[in-house]
Image 1: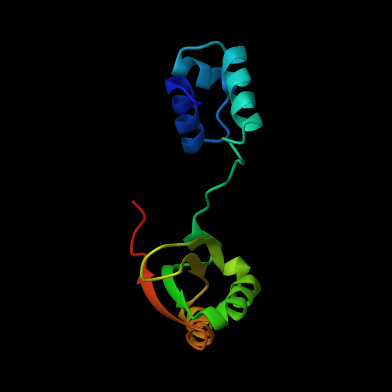
Image 2: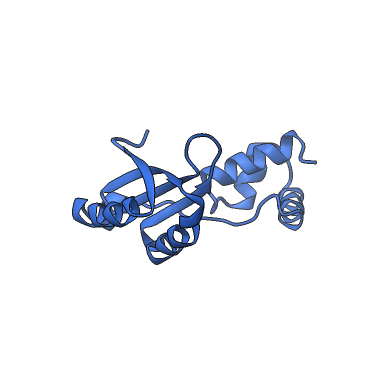
Amino acid sequence: MPDEIDLAIIKQLNRDARIKVSHLAQLVHLTAPAVAARIQRLEDADIITRYTVEVDLDKLGFPRQVFIQVAVQDRQHAAYLALVKRHHNDFRHHYRTTGQFDYLLEGAFQDRHVLTRFLQTLGTLATYEVIDVIDDI
C-alpha cells in the first residue's frame, strides 16, 4: 500500500515523468537511491504502469477536441467497437462508463469535416452526445 511519500512521488511524476531522480529526491526529502527504490517498487506492484507524453494537440494539427458520450444498443456493440478501432488514431481515451451512456470517447480531430464523417457513421450504430472542449486549464 502506497504511503504519503509514494503518493508525493507519483504526484511529481504525473507533473513531469522525465524529472531527474535527484531532483525528485530533494522534493520528497529522501536520498536519490531511496526514491529510485520506491519508484521500482511502485512499478513492480503495477501501481505505476506506464509513462506518457502530453502534447499540444492544436500544434499537432488536431484542433477539434471533443468528448463523445455514446449509448450503444446491445446488438451494435461489435460494430461500434470495430468503428472505434478503425478510428483509434482520433482518440486519446476510450472509457466504459455507467449511467445513461455506455462509453466516453476523448478525441481530437483535424477538422470539423473529419469529425462530422465519424459522427455520421457513429449515428448509424448508437446515440451520442458531443461535448466540445473550449479550453484546457
